[in-house]
Image (cartoon, rainbow, N blue to C red; front, side):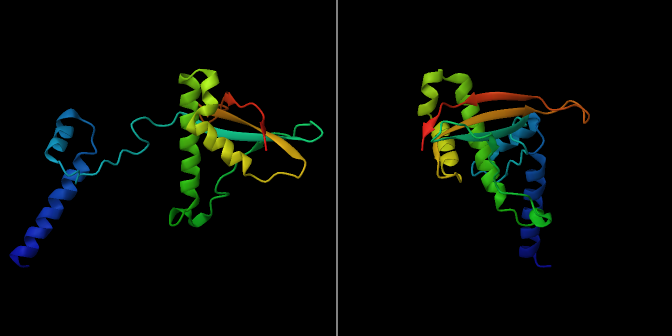
Length: 172
């Protein structure tokens, strides 16, 4: 092996070692990042700084011209995951986008006064999404609800469901 090739292998080996090392969340290890002004050492902190504590469920229903409400239906994004999803999973982005918008609306619902929520971007995004879902020809209004399930403490526990937000009815 020539010296130039050896130098490239050595640089890549050090880069790999440092990239793996900075994944450990200790202060003295994180100090290495101050010597990385170009962000060459990636941060692969799975589940972000805080892991999700549950899952979101977006439900919607219509009011028909006869003023009767349909049953609540869950918004299902991406459909069933095929067995080959570990290789190619385009529905992952849709599910992640919906999860992020639901998280943002949950945050807005906790922080903002109730009258300001319908003007927020997450609220309008979810209203737009559920309004575009299939409906029957007699549907005149739509309402959506955001629920969250808490993760069970043990595998035998049932998850707890909590309503985070219930929208008013909107004309279609």
